[in-house]
Image 1 (tube, rainbow, N blue to C red):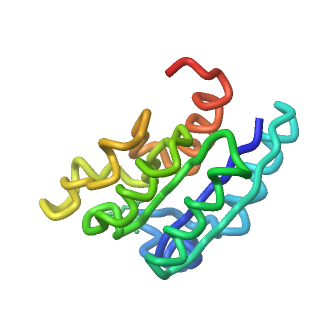
Image 2: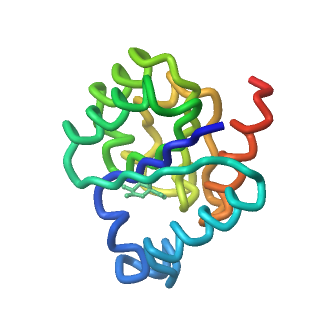
Length: 143
Ligand code: DQA
């Protein structure tokens, strides 16, 4: 099982960025948490982070041949990007949408997720643990 974890804009600043919403742990802490989890479960994991929409599209395309599942937190592109939605539809790799915060309880403009309809599951409001839940969901293959 090979999983690609993609993080979109501003998630490189975890720990610095709005800690009241996203917590004090850094992006590197997130990667270590996921790495340890995947090592325990024998899952091959790789990571990609970008602040640029087109680069995220390219990363999704690459997953077509290099991953069995995608975990993606598209950040603010969740609420704006039809290009990311189309990319997930195009590659046909099972994808889970993750949000650290509970976007359903935040501003109205965060209630829209374009990518959601192409995803097999959405996990929100569970902090970093949401990424682990997404990985376990993909590894279980029950979708
Ligand atoms: C986020 C929620 C988005 O609305 C926001 O733009 C982010 C992070 C989350 O993980 O909670 O950048 O995806």
